[in-house]
Image: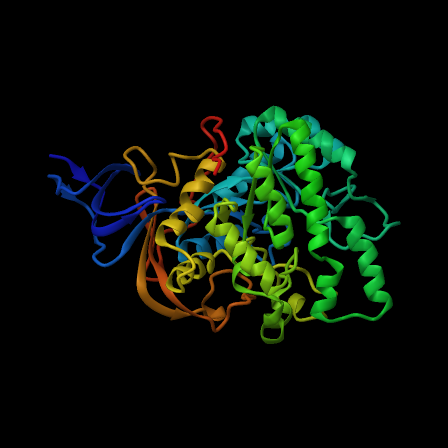
Length: 473
């Protein structure tokens, strides 16, 4: 007689297209069956999901755990514990660590480092730094990077390869931001690998000029901050990227879109059939410039949160499918760092633990359906980055990654209860209806009703098993 490791019964399964009642049977970390029937055999663990919704495990494709690097802000143990607490079963770690994931040897070092700490499964991005590592992109692809990221508009330290966020001409040991010809070459090289070329899309030349103008008139408000990084800064880079992608054929992905104008360009490019995709983050969906008076400097991110009209147009991009998925851009800084002047403090905040609750609250508010949540947090990111059907679905043979949700559960986000090292969030005090109550990674319970289980090292590296085409709308 078969013995099941886990059985989840009486829940409502949610996919990107439907909801239905069924039981899930799990053995050896994989889904064995999804059926209305009660299969014979004992189960070592049975979860009664009556009244709850059962999703394919949620994926956060964009986190910065600072590990190795400035781990006084965050590390991979804390970020992946926070992910598990927030209903996330897989995270994609960004490559701008110290050292960065810029060649195969550093990829292996990072895998060794993070594998000892992971509470959930993880994948690694590779970084693009032009001539400094173009020759290493094929070996990174062979190692299994989930995609390549280019921080468009940022300078790079010549010795450490670390990004310089507040570049000024004349800095020592600093490689100035790459010009468009460098980007063209990078795109050519990434296209050969078949991987995604993802960019932080802000035009540095414009930002430098506008910052000088704002500083000259003594501007220090949040409106002044937006004035230094307006929608135009994103539009110029997105427009250039689309045209370079048209020429090179690279799979071009725009990270954390913040403006309606740039989103319109992407929608038009998709209508042409170009391989262009775009993501956004909760701060662009649930915040606007109007919230700065209440939240303060903790909401400073790059690109900056803009206007209500941008927020509304980004929601429209969610509705019409222009936006492929939603991720957190989890980028913690310490309280002390974020409590300085608006112009001097770093950009970024915690996000991995609040991503799912915020999106579920969007369902409560009528902005999303449950199927939308499955599409945005599970199915499409898994397909886009080539890890479907291992991840992002509930079918026999898939990893038993499952997030169980109680849409009637009400809680208030409390910064002191976050599991990251940093407690900096723009959502402290926000009342949420709809919470993840159980997180299961490859058949192992890692969170149950807010209580975390397991130990560092239970999460595993995932890599692409084969090339996959972009999902087009």
